[in-house]
Each structure stands twice: as C-alpha cells, then as structure tokens.
Image (cartoon, rainbow, N blue to C red; front, top):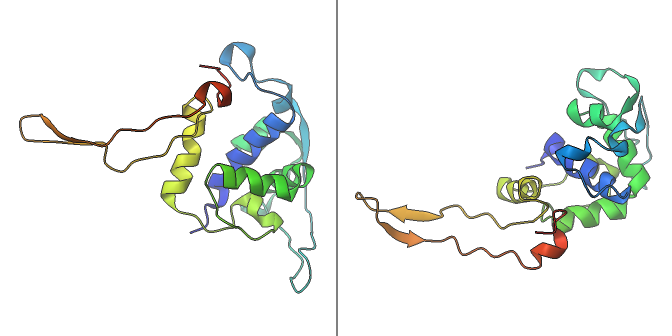
Length: 173
C-alpha cells in the first residue's frame, strides 16, 4: 500500500543532508535549513507522455504561501514537499528511498515524493528507524525473543549488526 504522507519526513531529512546540515543535535537548535522559506501554493505538473497533468493538493485544499521548512514538515504540507522534491531532483529522491529500503523499482513520477508508490509497513518502519537510531538503518525483526512461563528465554532472534555504523551515523558513534 502507498505510504502517502508518512514518506514526507524522509524527503525533508534528505533535503537537510543535501543542504549540508549534518549536526541536528538539540544543543545546536533547528539549523538554518528549517528556517528556509518554501512556497506553499498551487502547482500543476506535466508527468510525461500519456499521463494527465498532475495537480497535487494539501489536505483541506488550502494554501499558505511562503512557509518555513519546519512548518511544512510539522503540518505535512504536500505542495511544499513536491517543491522540495523538484529542487532535489526525482532521481535523488528515488535513490534515497531505495537506499532506505522504502521502495523497490518505483515509477519515476514526482508523486513518489508524497509516497504514491507501493511499500509495506515493515519497510516503512525500517526507514523510520533511521530517525531514532542516530542515522543508522537497522533491519527490523518481528519477534526478538520468546520466553517460557517462568521468564526463561527459549529463543533469541536479536542478532542484528550495524555495519559501518561509525561512518553512516551523524553522531559518529
């Protein structure tokens, strides 16, 4: 099923990385990238041969004009996300999504920035793990252990390893 707006934070995160913002620690504040103004206004886009024009909308069909990236992320503003995707380029968005394991061979349409391609809850959950694991992508497991009625572990499935974590984490740990 398409993840729809649940994919947007990854576009915003990628946008930050492209702008060179690596240290997003609370002590550093939001950073200049979150203060960047992005237009939230109607847009009509050509999707290519044999496809109709695409007119994405915000929930509620309202437009708010220039707004900060932070507000766009907080309010899940579709039109701002589409403009970010245009700025980054469709190939980069697709590569980033594939690297996170969200999609496998998605169609090259700008609507992918809003999560229009098919994925699974497990793949999306794995992609979100990056946010809570210091930038490290981990492979989720459905059952980590089974215990008997006395609390003794009879099966342990947590054998995950993070290869090159020091290199891929913004914390460097």
